[in-house]
Amino acid sequence: MTSPRLLTVRQGESRAYGRRARRGFSILELVITLVLVGIVATISGGRITQMRDQQRVNRAANSLQVQLEKAFAIAGRNRKPIEITWTASSMTLSVTDRSGAIVYGSAFLGNSNFGFKTGEVTATATSVEVYPSGLANGTISITINTVRGTRTYRKVISMTRAGMVKVT
Image (cartoon, rainbow, N blue to C red; front, side, top):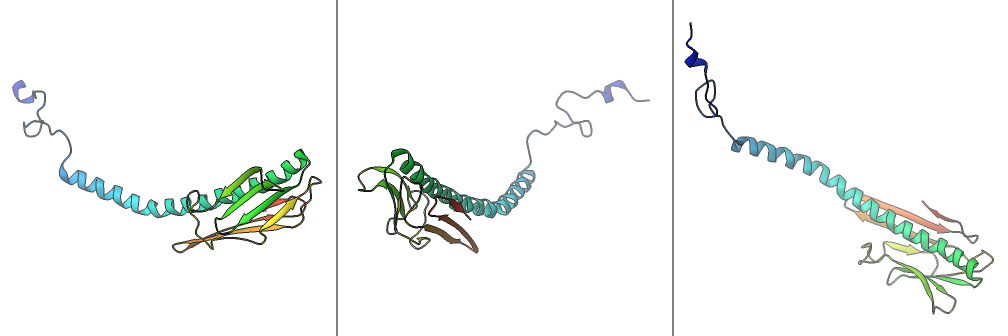
Protein backbone atom coordinates (compact mmCIF):
# COMPACT_ATOMS: atom_id res chain seq x y z
CA MET A 1 0.00 0.00 0.00
CA THR A 2 1.21 3.49 -0.69
CA SER A 3 1.44 6.11 1.89
CA PRO A 4 -0.56 9.33 1.44
CA ARG A 5 2.64 11.31 1.79
CA LEU A 6 4.05 9.98 -1.53
CA LEU A 7 0.97 10.93 -3.53
CA THR A 8 0.86 14.51 -2.44
CA VAL A 9 2.65 16.92 -4.69
CA ARG A 10 3.45 20.39 -3.59
CA GLN A 11 2.49 23.33 -5.77
CA GLY A 12 5.12 24.00 -8.46
CA GLU A 13 6.54 20.45 -8.43
CA SER A 14 6.37 17.87 -11.18
CA ARG A 15 4.70 14.57 -10.32
CA ALA A 16 7.27 12.47 -12.15
CA TYR A 17 10.49 13.66 -10.60
CA GLY A 18 9.49 15.87 -7.74
CA ARG A 19 11.18 18.88 -9.39
CA ARG A 20 9.66 22.29 -10.02
CA ALA A 21 7.48 22.57 -13.12
CA ARG A 22 9.23 24.27 -16.01
CA ARG A 23 8.17 27.80 -16.93
CA GLY A 24 8.61 29.46 -20.35
CA PHE A 25 9.96 27.94 -23.57
CA SER A 26 13.18 26.14 -24.31
CA ILE A 27 15.59 27.56 -26.88
CA LEU A 28 14.80 24.64 -29.20
CA GLU A 29 11.08 25.48 -29.20
CA LEU A 30 11.84 29.12 -29.98
CA VAL A 31 14.20 28.21 -32.84
CA ILE A 32 11.63 25.85 -34.41
CA THR A 33 8.95 28.53 -34.17
CA LEU A 34 11.18 31.16 -35.77
CA VAL A 35 12.13 28.80 -38.61
CA LEU A 36 8.46 28.07 -39.35
CA VAL A 37 7.59 31.78 -39.30
CA GLY A 38 10.50 32.45 -41.68
CA ILE A 39 9.33 29.79 -44.12
CA VAL A 40 5.77 31.16 -44.17
CA ALA A 41 7.04 34.74 -44.62
CA THR A 42 9.27 33.71 -47.53
CA ILE A 43 6.45 31.91 -49.30
CA SER A 44 3.94 34.73 -48.88
CA GLY A 45 6.39 37.63 -49.38
CA GLY A 46 6.66 37.19 -53.14
CA ARG A 47 2.91 37.01 -53.56
CA ILE A 48 2.38 40.17 -51.52
CA THR A 49 4.83 42.07 -53.76
CA GLN A 50 2.99 40.88 -56.88
CA MET A 51 -0.36 41.94 -55.44
CA ARG A 52 1.02 45.36 -54.53
CA ASP A 53 2.37 45.92 -58.06
CA GLN A 54 -0.91 44.82 -59.65
CA GLN A 55 -2.89 47.13 -57.37
CA ARG A 56 -0.61 50.05 -58.25
CA VAL A 57 -1.35 49.56 -61.96
CA ASN A 58 -5.09 49.20 -61.27
CA ARG A 59 -5.18 52.39 -59.18
CA ALA A 60 -3.37 54.34 -61.91
CA ALA A 61 -5.79 53.06 -64.57
CA ASN A 62 -8.79 53.99 -62.42
CA SER A 63 -7.36 57.45 -61.80
CA LEU A 64 -7.02 58.03 -65.54
CA GLN A 65 -10.53 56.69 -66.18
CA VAL A 66 -12.00 59.11 -63.63
CA GLN A 67 -10.24 62.10 -65.21
CA LEU A 68 -11.42 61.19 -68.71
CA GLU A 69 -15.03 60.71 -67.58
CA LYS A 70 -14.83 63.94 -65.58
CA ALA A 71 -13.93 65.91 -68.73
CA PHE A 72 -17.20 64.92 -70.44
CA ALA A 73 -19.25 65.69 -67.33
CA ILE A 74 -17.67 69.14 -66.89
CA ALA A 75 -18.06 70.03 -70.57
CA GLY A 76 -21.77 69.23 -70.41
CA ARG A 77 -22.32 70.96 -67.09
CA ASN A 78 -20.42 74.17 -67.90
CA ARG A 79 -21.48 74.23 -71.57
CA LYS A 80 -17.90 75.02 -72.55
CA PRO A 81 -15.25 72.95 -74.32
CA ILE A 82 -12.81 71.08 -72.08
CA GLU A 83 -9.29 70.05 -73.05
CA ILE A 84 -7.67 66.75 -72.08
CA THR A 85 -3.89 67.00 -72.32
CA TRP A 86 -1.29 64.23 -71.94
CA THR A 87 2.25 65.35 -71.11
CA ALA A 88 4.66 62.47 -71.64
CA SER A 89 7.68 64.07 -69.97
CA SER A 90 5.91 64.44 -66.61
CA MET A 91 3.45 61.58 -67.23
CA THR A 92 0.50 63.84 -66.43
CA LEU A 93 -3.05 63.80 -67.73
CA SER A 94 -4.70 67.20 -67.23
CA VAL A 95 -8.31 68.27 -67.62
CA THR A 96 -8.49 72.03 -68.20
CA ASP A 97 -10.61 74.63 -69.90
CA ARG A 98 -9.74 75.54 -73.48
CA SER A 99 -7.27 78.26 -72.49
CA GLY A 100 -5.62 76.12 -69.81
CA ALA A 101 -6.32 78.72 -67.11
CA ILE A 102 -8.67 76.52 -65.04
CA VAL A 103 -7.47 73.06 -64.08
CA TYR A 104 -10.37 70.76 -63.25
CA GLY A 105 -8.25 67.74 -62.46
CA SER A 106 -5.04 65.90 -63.21
CA ALA A 107 -3.46 62.51 -62.74
CA PHE A 108 0.28 62.32 -62.10
CA LEU A 109 1.69 58.89 -62.87
CA GLY A 110 5.35 59.68 -62.19
CA ASN A 111 7.57 58.70 -59.30
CA SER A 112 5.83 60.66 -56.56
CA ASN A 113 2.40 59.01 -56.88
CA PHE A 114 2.54 55.71 -58.73
CA GLY A 115 6.23 55.21 -59.41
CA PHE A 116 6.09 54.58 -63.15
CA LYS A 117 9.21 55.26 -65.17
CA THR A 118 9.38 57.09 -68.49
CA GLY A 119 8.27 54.75 -71.25
CA GLU A 120 6.00 52.63 -69.06
CA VAL A 121 3.02 54.89 -69.81
CA THR A 122 2.24 55.88 -73.40
CA ALA A 123 -0.64 57.70 -75.05
CA THR A 124 -1.91 57.79 -78.64
CA ALA A 125 -2.77 61.50 -78.54
CA THR A 126 -1.41 64.49 -76.64
CA SER A 127 -4.55 66.62 -76.73
CA VAL A 128 -8.26 65.95 -77.12
CA GLU A 129 -11.00 68.54 -76.89
CA VAL A 130 -14.41 67.63 -75.43
CA TYR A 131 -17.38 69.68 -76.57
CA PRO A 132 -20.57 70.45 -74.58
CA SER A 133 -22.56 68.30 -77.01
CA GLY A 134 -20.90 65.24 -75.47
CA LEU A 135 -18.56 64.53 -78.36
CA ALA A 136 -14.79 64.85 -78.57
CA ASN A 137 -12.65 65.82 -81.54
CA GLY A 138 -10.66 62.59 -81.29
CA THR A 139 -9.93 59.48 -79.29
CA ILE A 140 -7.20 58.74 -76.80
CA SER A 141 -5.77 55.49 -75.58
CA ILE A 142 -3.33 55.37 -72.68
CA THR A 143 -1.31 52.21 -72.09
CA ILE A 144 0.36 51.33 -68.80
CA ASN A 145 2.87 48.55 -69.36
CA THR A 146 5.28 47.75 -66.55
CA VAL A 147 7.56 44.79 -65.89
CA ARG A 148 8.44 43.83 -62.31
CA GLY A 149 10.69 40.80 -62.05
CA THR A 150 9.25 38.14 -64.33
CA ARG A 151 5.70 39.52 -64.36
CA THR A 152 4.24 42.05 -66.79
CA TYR A 153 1.35 44.26 -65.72
CA ARG A 154 -0.63 45.96 -68.48
CA LYS A 155 -3.73 48.13 -68.57
CA VAL A 156 -5.15 50.05 -71.51
CA ILE A 157 -7.51 52.97 -70.91
CA SER A 158 -9.44 53.86 -74.09
CA MET A 159 -11.75 56.80 -74.65
CA THR A 160 -14.05 57.03 -77.66
CA ARG A 161 -15.27 60.24 -79.30
CA ALA A 162 -18.67 59.69 -77.65
CA GLY A 163 -17.17 59.63 -74.17
CA MET A 164 -17.13 55.92 -73.41
CA VAL A 165 -14.09 55.13 -71.28
CA LYS A 166 -13.01 51.52 -71.06
CA VAL A 167 -10.22 49.91 -69.01
CA THR A 168 -8.90 46.58 -70.26
